[in-house]
Image 1: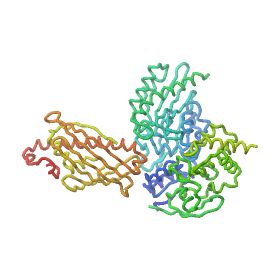
Image 2 (image 1 turned 30 degrees about the vertical axis):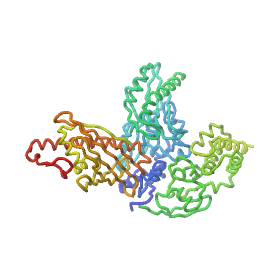
Image 3 (image 1 turned 120 degrees about the vertical axis):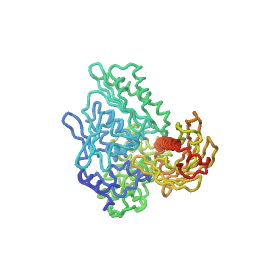
Image 4 (image 1 turned 135 degrees about the horizontal axis):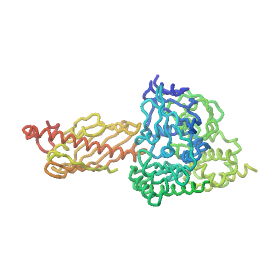
Length: 284
Length: 158
Length: 174
């Protein structure tokens, strides 16, 4: 039967179902999928629920200090996860401003990254945190760096019949991770967002920035990161903002015109950078 | 193409058995099949909060929940919350403070406020704002809702 | 939403003009075009699929040329919808030709596109990006097709001499 609701007990079983029913959709928290169904943008005849797959729940520590975050981790739990400390705070902060409390009880990290809406909070935070996405295919798992996972508008590196099984985070480093979001109202999708991690190493800093809401993928410009590291001057900061603007391809929509988003990039970058630098400076 | 699934759920402590299409939301089931019209369809996108109910004690959006996925779970709507001490205190405070006008958002506000007070017995103004930011109101301007929630909190403490 | 752009074609302006008034040829250049049916010398029906992430939208469109001012202007209208009117699309299109030199023509396109319904309501910002990308792909295909045609004609001048000008052409030139 190729219709109905299925509750596989393992990732392998879920993949078998997807292989058998190419038109089936995965349902994780349902926050994105059911909204799409209500908007008539999806009409799946079959659903594969991930609710009973133990492997997808929880956070586990990996040798080397990194974290494996199961795809079903709810935003509510990510927002309260104490192990997202130091530079990994960018993840905790992004999760805590997704939508509202009630929606955070439902949405999951795997569902969010698979949906890849350009205004989501996780994508730039994951890119700034140097996360990688674990993709499960029949018989094989592979990891894709976050910046390579988001490919185009609502499009990811997931192939047909594949699913996100986890998100891998590198070990937290001493420093800060912050997520600034500009939206029309609390809980809205981001008009523009800045995800920033800053590590302090002796006298120099190492900064990594990703911009959300300004293109099909989070903006990551290595030259901008380089300019924002070491001992950046005001000119370096200005130039980094310019580079990020040049890399942007924002949409015009009700949340802001493309022009407005471009204008916000260097301003928000400067605020985030200065806040991070002050925090790191105040650390022992 | 619709596929009917047989689902057994608890709604306000009563067991219910239903045959629903795969893509039917809990909101549609509550309102159209069970005549529990307290939960409202405001945006049908999970943004406005007028459809907020609890599933197994956790506040969720009924418009983003598929009934077929609720097998074995326990749903509580505003209609089933009458005897709840926290809801009762909130209802009195809402009326006294004028925290409702048209009443459309009110069931969702109460469900969300109860969840807050169960977790935080003395929320500050900011904490109420943060916690209830997912419940939109077009009438009151929110001030009175915040006052009502904090008044109810105070009463429940004493 | 306003979609505009321009591209240069290595062909004389008169030749480019004949091509852009050929509904069959124009339809071939539309990305995602699955079927074309010529309805009249100045109109055709096309079934075009637009992909946005996992969403496939199949539009049944009718394109009609509404005004021709040889050798430099063509106005046309596109009207259509998805099955069961899930989305409705309409576009007013303007194509202008400018002679750069005797063998090169600059084609400029401006379209005012309106999308209502499910795609207009929830994904309009991204739809605009998609339609802009389709505009660029259309331009690339049209330029290539015209240049190929023009090169073939240069090799067979006797056959080309019999082709009429204006909207009377109904098929692809040999």
